[in-house]
Length: 90
Image (cartoon, rainbow, N blue to C red):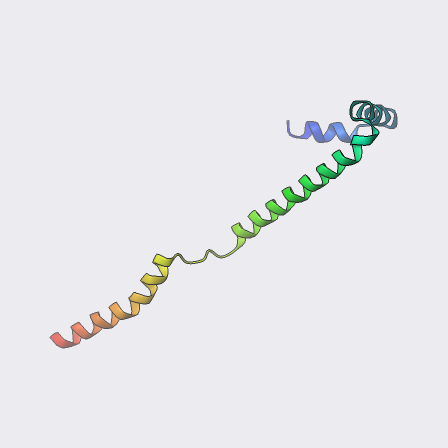
């Protein structure tokens, strides 16, 4: 069902394309058409930028949270304490 809109665009012939262009010109006028095209271009650029940023964030290695950093810093100290305590008993 997702292929229907794409197939529609591939089946447009010259006469149908001219009819669509004329309808767009009649609806928006020649003065507003460049502004509309410019706005669509900006929106498409922002959408692509946001999509690439999201993709980069998903593919990037996650940064450790402050809690994880603190736990990693305490881990060697706690290991030394446990080793030291074990030696005192022996």
